[in-house]
Amino acid sequence: DAKTTQPTSMDCAEGRAANLPCNHSTISGNEYVYWYRQIHSQGPQYIIHGLKNNETNEMASLIITEDRKSSTLILPHATLRDTAVYYCIVGDNQGGKLIFGQGTELSVKP
Amino acid sequence: NAGVMQNPRHLVRRRGQEARLRCSPMKGHSHVYWYRQLPEEGLKFMVYLQKENIIDESGMPKERFSAEFPKEGPSILRIQQVVRGDSAAYFCASSPQVLRDEQYFGPGTRLTVT
Image 1 (cartoon, chains in turn blue, orange):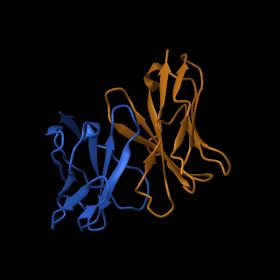
Image 2 (cartoon, rainbow over the protein chains, first blue to last red):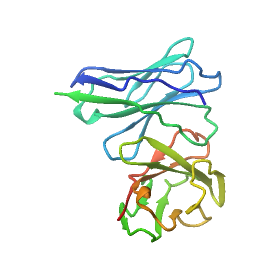
Image 3 (cartoon, helix red, strand yellow):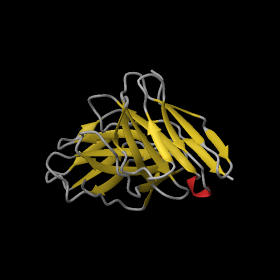
């Protein structure tokens, strides 16, 4: 599985967009980009995933660069409840384990 | 649709006892995964099961740990002769048959070994 690199931590003002970057320069052509988050002490929560096209759902948007070597998760209007560790994971969508890195600790501040 | 259920939510065991952690996947999900999160550490994969089969146990310690997902009933993660280093949060996740990389996690079981 390809590895990902994320900043250790980020701050965001409440109500503003939170843009969380992820580098996955060794991603293979059949690998997807997944985002999960873990709010303190809770089970991880699936957010969104994509292959090459940008994706949007009720929680977030995922922007994947054309060369697929990096992506950005966008929370359009961050709230205090979005404070969490965000994980960018690459997988081939064939099932099996998720490999969690250290993620980005996002702090949304009033 | 109820989410992934885990019980107990908190479990205290003395060293040498057995711990049994249960996971009921979401309705219609036939894939179950177990992860462990040690204090102040990241999530680590332990085992992946389908009904009555272990698919990948590459993250499972070789001794004292076992997992099953029977045809009927919840998945069970069993830890025999627990030691203090087993103290952690254990998360179960499930996924539907098709989108297998989209996993839905339970609230976890916090195991404390005294």
